[in-house]
Length: 85
Image 1 (spheres, rainbow, N blue to C red):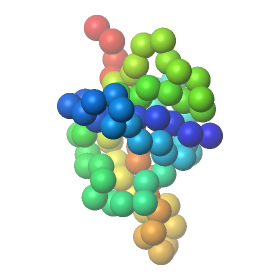
Image 2 (image 1 turned 180 degrees about the horizontal axis):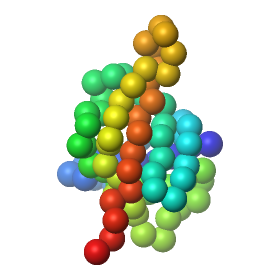
Image 3 (image 1 turned 90 degrees about the horizontal axis):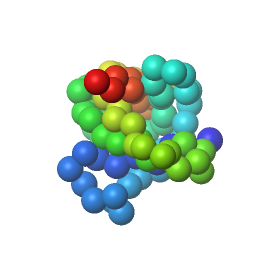
Image 4 (image 1 turned 60 degrees about the horizontal axis):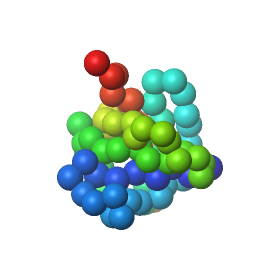
């Protein structure tokens, strides 16, 4: 499964696709190959999940970035969905 995201200040065409690790009501986690690509507190829009375009994009906030395995090659990015007010 894949997730399509774009940075808040970027053009929609500047999106990136990431392998989805987990999906829940409160957030997602996905795989990144670069530990410096995301930092805690980064915000972005989630546009699509597994080829399903969302009617309204969801704002995600990075809560953590951690190695997936002992080799430190792949990283898990934990994202919380921002509550709508």
